[in-house]
Image 1 (spheres, helix red, strand yellow):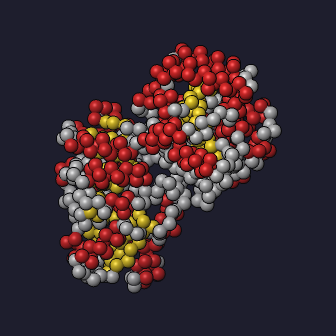
Image 2 (tube, helix red, strand yellow):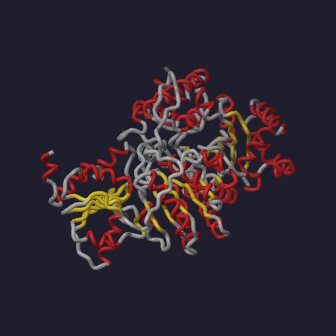
Image 3 (cartoon, rainbow, N blue to C red):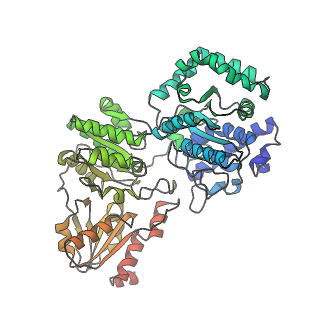
Length: 615
């Protein structure tokens, strides 16, 4: 196998084209084999194989910095940069990250997990390079979905202004996770079918096969003559960025040839590369949305696997039905229709659904605009992505106490996606915001009750729920809920476990049938049920949450007790003050001591442990 010969990018330099083509297929087979076992980002990585091989053949990593936006398409990059012997550990606890990670390899230029960050990183590196009078290339690979993100567009504006030497590779596969949206995406689609572009691509390929590097000055001399044509067709011209393409992203020979010549160009250049998501694997080519990040599967007989009924689906079903009851309801998502369970909603209520693309800040402020004019918007967003719209939550929503509901998916640790995706900071960064209320349902029925009531109580409301499955409830079921109240699920005589969100099931398991241990579904964090807390303050209290211990639910309980002048023995369980790596959710909970055994241990340390010690 050719892959056996490749231990670093330098080993690509001596391979023939035939060997490189064979290597591409071996890499695809290895990506399929490992993601079948571990799950992972399959379709996006399959589509970038030839591009990654061409980049490493032409450039000199790690001296030259190759940045992958998001990093989920970089599996081939990992395989050829000294990590193939550990590739089977991908996304496993203690193994390789599913994204690029600076601390994992010197070949990983950035740690990434969120979209649209690579261009600003690249600009910073180019500025640092020139200031230090060093000589290396900076190459940023960004997908067409990520390029429409506000951060990427803002970086493009500054890149064009400063004119630093760098290469931007636009990996255009017409997909991010969901289908791409926005004016720039429409431009890419239109551009690829324009006859003048197709003719120019053919002519350009012919010329490039005979051109010598010294003739590349013709590009700049021809620039002025081409203005009248290109400035009408090409938005990158307005940014001051040289645009080349589109070119075939699976033509390995052609890519190597073009990249060799683009190295000689000064200033910022964008190479538009068209690839096919899921390339080389028929099921992934046919359905790149499902196979973007599938769970484990049989590579010889790949079939869609039911992941069970998730909290995301429970939310999607609830808002779909709720929209029939409330004509002012409007749902927004930042490019996460499938992930947030909104496919059904988008089909049944297309006129009251908006995907803003990878622009979380735009989603929040657009919702604010809707609320100002009488709509009742719900922003469906992952906890990790809401971090990117923190200012908008404060400035555009909370100050004027606008009725915007934040449906916060993937709250808590999320497993194999690791530190960039754990939703473990939202309580701390939201609960300090005036006017904003925070809740966490114990099940799908309570989620429905909270969503319906949130539209009635007004003001900004955040409802957080985990990445997990939940029991399905009958359609049309809308129970009432006493807003701002806790629920005692089990009475106790010595200690009460106050559980917020997903940890409630651990609390019930830990309490068992011990009459000394009570359990409270502390479903509202803000407003906190101070009346119930006052009544419980005469017992020992143990708080538990799937969130950072610092600044979380337990901190809120301690602050409330202090404000009320109450003394109580309180122990707070939560996640430690460090970034948690990737691993299974149960394992991460076990390490943090917030699972049932961890709660039992804490109870024993509080003097309520003899029943467990005998078990």
